Each structure stands twice: as C-alpha cells, then as structure tokens.
Image (tube, rainbow, N blue to C red; front, side, top):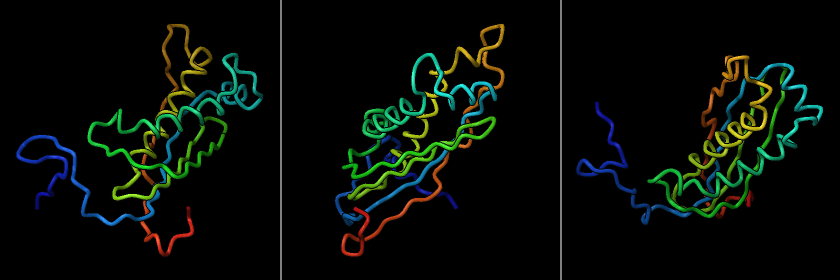
Length: 163
C-alpha cells in the first residue's frame, strides 16, 4: 500500500496547508553524535581549543539553526519557537548532542530539532577540524552519525503546563 506524500501535490512539491489543524503545544526531541579522537575530546573538556569554547559555540549555532529552519528546508512552516534545550554528553570518543524544541502551533517541530542537532555537530567539527586532520588533510575517524528524532509530542493548550 503506497503512502501519500504530503508535500507532493499533482506531481509538484508544495507546502502543506495546516490552517485546519488545532493549535497545540508541540515538542520534539532529537539527537546525534560526532565521533572524534580521544585527544580532541580531552582538548574540548579542558577548554583549550584554539578557536574557543566549542560547546558554547555549538549551542549558539544550534539555536540559530532552529530559528532559521524554514529558510533552509523549503517546505517547513515558520513557527513560533517557545523554548529550546540543548545538551552535550562527552564520552571518550564521541560527543552526543540532544536538542528539545517547544512550540505552540499547527505543525510539528521535529525538523527544527534535527536541524539544531545537525548544526551543533557541524560546528563542533568545524572548531576542531585542525586537530582531527591526518597527514593528508583528511578526516579518517571524524564521523557524524545517528541523527534522529527520538520523540515528538503534542498536547492541548488546556492540559499543558510546558510553556
């Protein structure tokens, strides 16, 4: 059984009309990881990366990306972002980023959440790329992986105490 693609109409891409959807509290939680060398992780932990505070910069980059998602992904609606939570978990060989986005509206916030995760991870890579390069100028071990939406919710305004 074929599933309808909501962004395709008469063979053309289009923005979905959400005017008849209820206005509700919507949240999305997304995650992703970047694999780095143990030495690079330790440099981030110690705060001695030459370009500055890696995680603070990645946090700001995620926030900006979330706000600009409709400019980056053509069929995304502009939605009112009501809250953003960004967390980083450092292991020996990776940093995992988790982003939660909250909104009140007629469409979900999962694209904003995964865009925030993606941009945070790309920013980390950019800030430490000189430490990750091998002798040929390549990045044999640096990998961004497992970007995904963990959970999305919607809740009526009357029942919500989220915002």
